[in-house]
Length: 339
Ligand code: AMP
Ligand code: MG
Image (spheres, rainbow, N blue to C red):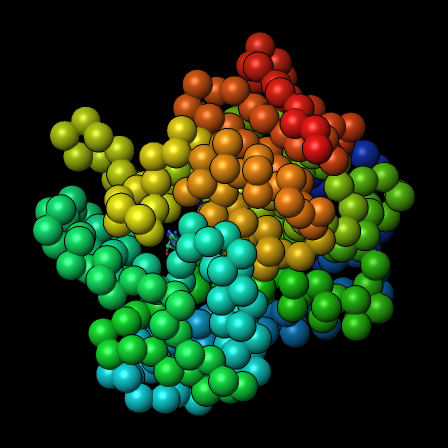
């Protein structure tokens, strides 16, 4: 993510907190973790202590889940050469839920995609366009159905490598919301690299206003009013490189090993669960609009904002009353999908 985008994310938070009356007893904290900027804002008593605990928890999760930190459990699993690896409660819980979501999305989410992600150079920023033959041989190692998780023991086939980058921030947000609730807080807003999670409403009782970034550059496409929800976006614009006039982004279609070209450029999921929203934002980006709409019709646990490359905005009916196009986006087409 470039610096302009970081600034934009900070501005999203400013937009959110500057609307309505200034809440009492606000405590905020900004940290850099999981390769992104995280902003936490809490309101009410015990806020400072809760923020300190939340930061410590984020560092702990990062140290368990990072693919590049040589002390992490995921790093150990990726080096395990077919041998079983013992996992902590958090890693085991996230992995179990991730595997369910890989199945539910029929492999649009596939956490074993890591060798392909590496071939494109995303973890190191040493970008390159791999040859088709290289991609097809790497795809032989991508198959989440071969991951064995029994209680706290993970066994990967030799050569398989996993990456929880598509789900880790959503899981982290869920755990922080639990921590805030257990600290007696009833109003908080966090942005984990643009993944927004809201606890309760603002202290004046009105909903949080959360911006959906414009995929076309700076600024916003829309605004959502939410309470007690995760608002999680996957965008092609979040991490990408350009070569020979082509843009290559970090969301990979596990069927092709290439950046997903589904016609969508941004997918926002609104859900109670952060890990669900995070998994589905990535998976629906891969699925494309038609398959995403069919998938949504089979479930009741999320709503969506899809933006396609023509700039059309498609939302599900559950958020029709809480979503509006942002000022500069008023002339874009807005379509509401019903059940
Ligand atoms: P997100 O920003 O949540 O959409 O997650 C994107 C990150 O997830 C990428 O940077 C990769 O590390 C990883 N990733 C990309 N494509 C997939 C996929 N189809 N399934 C699982 N993880 C993916
Ligand atoms: Mg995701």
